[in-house]
Length: 82
Image (tube, rainbow, N blue to C red; front, side):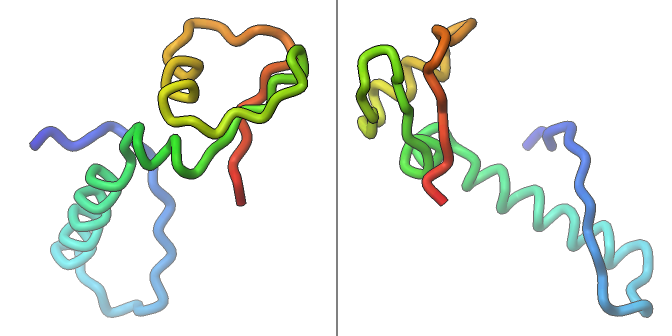
């Protein structure tokens, strides 16, 4: 599995972790993120506010289509549901 090129900031409470155990923790974190960062999970966690049509879009198919566009229309916002 190819590890993605990403910057992670990991705060560790224990000072006694050595280099090998820290690498192991980071590899496990990368594996978790690789499995959970999918377009389906993104569509579940986000919604689209289309202020041009005064609509809120929840459908995964429509969100996927908007995300894959090169450029969004003006006043179309992708927002996290949190």
